[in-house]
Amino acid sequence: MRESPVDRLRGPVKSYKKCSFCEKTSDRVARLFPGVHDAYVCDECVTYYYHLLADIESGAVDPKSGVRLPVEDQP
Ligand SMILES: [Zn+2]
Image (cartoon, rainbow, N blue to C red):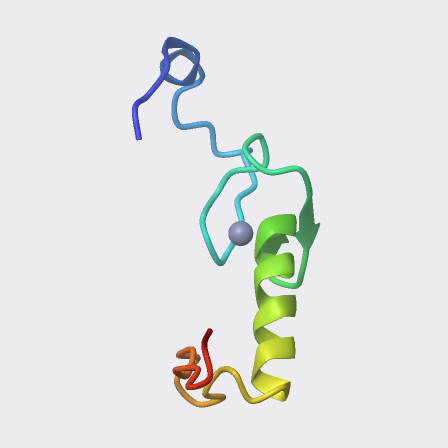
């Protein structure tokens, strides 16, 4: 990922909150939800894990490894 001049001016500012899952900072995601002990989760990760959970429950993803299982009946 290339650093823009604006990013360089901002520098490593500690006040930037970031997602504990994907490490995107609050200025790079639409929403950042706070958890306990300075943990955060962004809207993108919420969406990702929401769909992952739905896929696990439907049997499309292995619940232990999180790996998507091969679909045998693809057109
Ligand atoms: Zn995230």
